[in-house]
Length: 419
Ligand code: NDP
Image 1 (tube, helix red, strand yellow):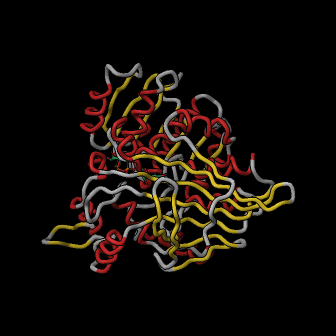
Image 2 (cartoon, protein in one colour; image 1 turned 90 degrees about the horizontal axis):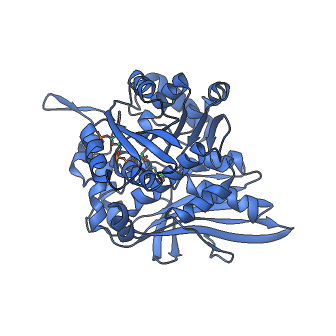
Image 3 (cartoon, protein in one colour; image 1 turned 90 degrees about the vertical axis):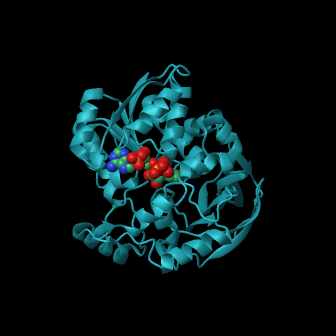
């Protein structure tokens, strides 16, 4: 049915690629293109002979729009899956626009260089106007709405787990369970243990930027920002147990606040162990999380990038990580005039993921929805020109696909609520 260009070949992409290859009826041909072509070739070798999907590979620097345009013109895909880093989102969107090809990604845009003056000025204006100070937000990609609409192509933003599946859960709850959703608590629990004192489950630079930023939530029409890790709750997660969790700013809050009518409050919590928090605080205190270049022995280095070279590669955590993740959304609201609560979640086992695709559950829970989002676009189940997030489409075929492709969901009509 489809020919797809997949950019990136890291932890998440390698899962998405393997899932595409399990689904050859939809993904007949894929090109894997990344900065380091050797990784693409190694994955192709591993998969060839085990799939009907025809795989080719290429080298690309996706920061360079013209290189992406040349690749698209040569390969003629129906869709580009951006599973590189959020830094490349705009260059790849520009290339898709120029070539009139559908686009999707798993995380919203943030710049690599947060000191760049034009970006900095827009960022500071947004901080003042909106009231949250994360480096990422949707404004950069939403700015392409009209252009994508006019070109008759679709951009699907953030089809991972969170963002991604969490928004499909919200759309599903609104469609089938509620007349009005009043509050949404997104709970992201990783009960896995990799045995290291400190490691990140996905790209360390993106991960550490996210969790070291101030927390924020949406309430009564505006953002409330709080110091990083200053709101803590304890929750007993199905199949994982009791964990400490902390309120974080998270990108899907921004789109859900616009797309879920009358919602009063949206919060996002993630679980962290004490060892992770102690290490992070120490690294931050000594400046190792900084993205500002410094000169070391005559050479310019970026501290957080140097730190990345010291930390375990997230892709190497697969064989060591034991335990489960539990990610979902708790809703309160009204149905037929009565108060109602509802919880939708997925439990995913790190070792089961490793047996299937050689990765831990964080890459798995992101890579599977990336494949599913692509499938929605390729099969025409989701088909409208413009730039959209997951909750703006019919959730039913996506929810069905989650059950079929490895992330079955569970529900509870009497969940314990978060205080
Ligand atoms: P990795 O660092 O493991 O992989 C990133 C890949 O992108 C690597 O193959 C890397 O190449 C490639 N890449 C980086 N820069 C370029 C470039 N300029 N041109 C071409 N390729 C490039 O990251 P992850 O797999 O952990 O994360 C992938 C994405 O998924 C990120 O955007 C992350 O934010 C997102 N994510 C989303 C989640 C969700 O639930 N929605 C959860 C977790 C992650 P090289 O091998 O040379 O380094």
